[in-house]
Image 1 (tube, rainbow, N blue to C red):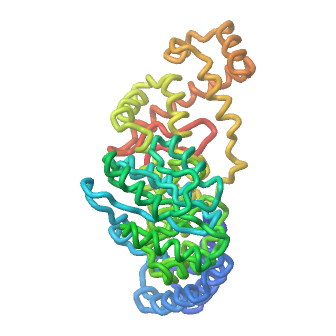
Image 2 (image 1 turned 60 degrees about the vertical axis):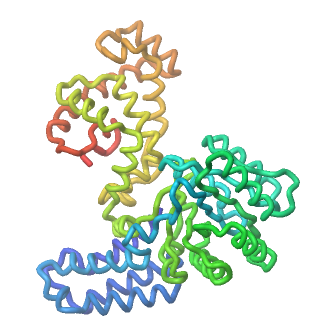
Length: 453
């Protein structure tokens, strides 16, 4: 995500970093390189000009040129400018404006066909469900044949009700019937999946206007594809001019996107980017944090997001117990298996590593031996609980049985046990040095140390 843009901007910052003094020429060279990086990332030209002009104006001031560490001062200016162009720092501006649980809130999902609107509706519903709300998905895309079925499948997958009417012709009527059903079933949030088109046209806007008038939505969220670059910002601007948006959801944010959409949206539309889709799973849906994304672009990582992901799958009490085990060298193969499964739940290992400061662009997908991790899990899963509790009892006959059960060799089983013994010693040292509030037990053999966040 944003790897190319991050790499080019990091290179641009070399003009000013590590120097005891910098000149206006250094600043101009750095800003010129940043400008080229932004244009290559398909950022809107007007946005690039504003970014460059405001950065140069501030960076050439005495505060930077006479600073003790002018390079760091310049980086701070670039960071702050990126944050302001990505969105508002106040999270309340980006938060959904929904009513209390006693009154039904309505969210209208808009977008062109293929932008990921239906999937995003389900992801948003799951997120609201986790926050304690009771959402209902409403199938008002009556044009695309598979839309209703897709929404039903997604609803079943995340255990959220879906209201649909086969053969329906009027989306407003479908919404009205869904609202009546929601009242009877104590629903507090209705998420309407609307019809998409290959392009913006009058019939599409007319239908959305009718739905808007009938539902009086609390949120009008446009779903845009980040891979379309600055075109996503132009589409958002047109939608906003026609029916007035409250925010944007950017999909495919985990792709090799150039970043133009994210950096252009706020300036072009004036509307906040509220969420990003970061994968195919229903859980791959995150609130947009401008400061965190700016940090990733500048290679500073995003430890806060990484910790939040860890907290979703690691119970704090279990984490503290695990740290005690590590300190006493009581960490078992059972704990290791649980660890592997927890990390897998957090999503792509490469994405997690990119959140660590200095790791952006350092490790590619090819560098991560996924097959090895799968073999390790298969070997551990083929052991009995008794064997995982005490690896010392695993002699030659047991190793042969484990190898057969996991589809591996006796040598591979022996190698996993040897790695585990070496890791236990390392973890004991690591746990003793861990500070209060850190998340222990995130290191795996063959992987960079992911402990101590």
